Amino acid sequence: MNSNKPMSVGKAAIQKDIEAEMGKRKENSTVAFETMDLYGDETRVTETGKITVKDSTGTLTYSGKYMAVWEKRDGKWLTIRDISNDDAKEK
Image 1 (spheres, helix red, strand yellow):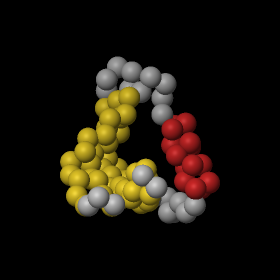
Image 2 (cartoon, helix red, strand yellow; image 1 turned 90 degrees about the vertical axis):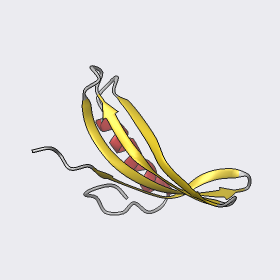
Image 3 (cartoon, one colour; image 1 turned 45 degrees about the vertical axis):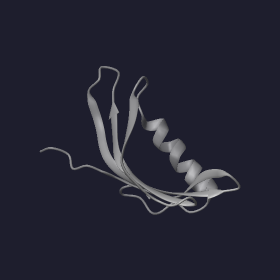
Image 4 (cartoon, helix red, strand yellow; image 1 turned 180 degrees about the vertical axis):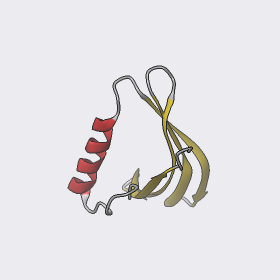
């Protein structure tokens, strides 16, 4: 569930959206995820945090926040829900 887009449903649609977003990033940019909170139990966990993207000079090009729901299936943690949105741009 990305900003300004309809919700992606199904593995193929989600993969297509992720590839498109990754393709927009400039070469040598860095992406950092900062986990702010985790809560849940031994089978399901919700994670909230911040996202920052910087270009090759270290200049901030994007910031936002996210929430992901993880579920343990067959001994592996899988993301079963993910939403992110942009921080407001300074005027």
